Length: 147
Image: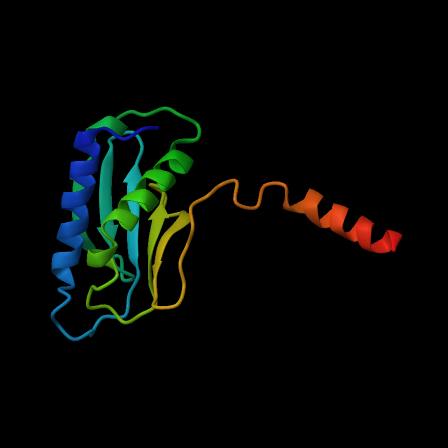
């Protein structure tokens, strides 16, 4: 799914609203993750803290009544790219590190960790990053055993 310009703008406003709840110029006092719950039938996107208190919400019109079977995999990539584009905002919120942005479905099931905000760890969204690794390792091992 290629996000429209409107979708990217809606996600940016959504993220900025989340960030206003944890302004970077304040000392970190919260210890929480940000849970992003997406409702596939309504396009509603909601953010919650660990106590299930709502932080903010928005509607992504492009996602309303989306019936794709791989909807959550598609929006995982969209969210990861978006959060990377606003990393200066999300990595500096007044939340004790490490904290995560976690994608959930409408039944509160964890779908994916979208971004881990920590000074030393980065999540890379490259689905084929490890593609072919098994073959490479098997070839390497076979080559070693020949010697």
